[in-house]
Amino acid sequence: MVGWLPQYQRSWLSSDLIAGFTIWGLLVPEMIAYAGLAGLSPQAGLYTLLATLGLYAIFGTSRQLVVAGTSASAVLVFSAVSGLAATSSSDSANLAAGLIVATGALLVVAGLLKLGFITQFLSRPVMAGFVFGLAIFVCVSQLPKLLGLEKGDGNTLQQLGHLIRDLDDASVTTLVVGLAALALLWGLEMRAPRVPGGLVVLALGIGLSALFNLADHGVAIIGDIPTGLPSLSVPDVRVDDLWVLLPSAIGMMLVIYSEALGAATTFAEKHGYRLDSNQEMIALGLANIGSGFLGGLAGGGSLSQSAVNDGAGARTELSPVFASLLSLVTVIALTPLFHDLPEAVLAALIIHAVSHLMRVREMRGFYRLVPSEFWLGMATLAGVVLFEVLAGLIIGVLLSLVLFIARASRPRVSVLGENPAVPGAYLDVQRHPQARTTDGVLVVKVDAPIFYANAQSVRDSIDDLVENAVVRAVVLDLDTNDDIDVTTADQLVKLRHSLDGRGITLGLARVHAPTLLTAERAGLIQAADSSQVFPTVSAAVAWATEDQRRI
Image 1 (tube, helix red, strand yellow):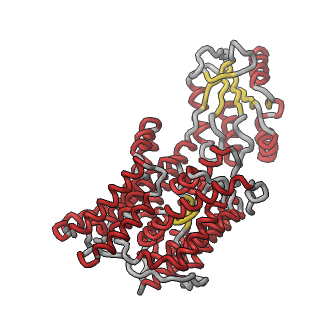
Image 2 (cartoon, rainbow, N blue to C red):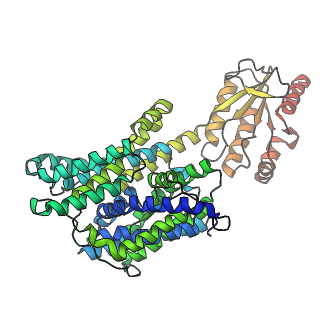
Image 3 (cartoon, one colour):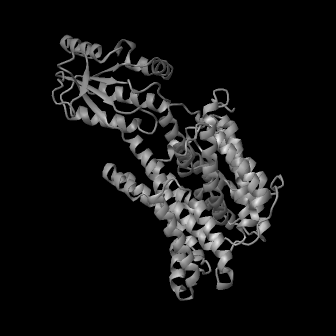
């Protein structure tokens, strides 16, 4: 806990304070906007900062990561809660708090069980496609506020169709306000990237709205935001509702953790320190539990927010702690300032924030590298747009698992030959034509561990190779296997019997100790004869050659 504090240097203080003030200016408008995105009251976004920034600073291991509400987690909260029959806004807020606390609890448990590796099952193209689809979903969901129209029902395409049909009823004044805010945000980003554009647009939006009384001209405004500290309360969620929310909590846990770990890793590599992935899970979980108890949003580690923090000179987690203190002042005394904020300005802030998630260049790169994985990402994107957010993520995960299983079940079986430049070293003859094979001896190696899902496929591949060659001995290099399961041992025994029936001997090379132990227990060694197990491929080939001479 607070791993950065014992090494803290006084010279870092000014940089951390400046960075803290900078991210406060970024986070306040974003959190108010994301609260609307999650279907919660504006103050919920500010309450988030009171919990997530400080708790992560205490328990996290990244020095630059900013943990606050994110667009992805806000949409996931809205998607999950809107599927339940909430009778009022307070009921929706209670369900959202229950979902966020459940997500936090799952993260803490996963961290304690050292399950930090689980996001490795979410491939980068799948996450990129999910985030891209999420950005489209968010933009379309914010267009009604930008146009002064009612939001339609259905998926993203249906909502877009509803907007197009109702364009004649759009508020020109609202549209001008929203487009002006967007233009200013993108202009400041291009011309003055160090200026907190969100805070500038927020201040101008409030000032111009009050000056010209935009509410009387059909522009919707935020209205009153309660002043004062939130109350600490445990969400009162029925068990039936909790079971319905659990799949969403699992999906949100994966998204929050993978997004945060990706951002944290970026800055850890940049500044030369190591992360504890399991502790990161615990820290994110505690941050979400705290936010849920305060009635805030789901908290995650945003790359854009963290990049602003790092760019402003943050050296440690003291910068978000300072931002949290400024947020406390905002909640206690400054919320009346947001009364006249136009909702179109909030929509512009959200659209601007998520526009950076539409990474067309990255998707093109996936297509050039591995087209099949590009289409995985596109399928995930389509799932988000055509169905809903969680369904899109599930589609991506399932397709990734199918692709993984398909690849794992059909590993490549390489034929090896001796490297003429390095005696005793063996290479794949297909990739290295200069490698020399030994007459009558087939040396094979599986380019992946053999296990129950691919053992039959490996055996069939070796049988096919034997049928297409004049072979008196087969040497199987088992270096890729640290252990074998019962199914693998059984298939290897059957392979031995099949080869015996053809008058071909089988030798095993580079057998690891755990594999050897399992093989002995399973009866493989007795079937293959322990005298035909060798420490190196060259020793096995020498035995096979001598065996042929005796014949």
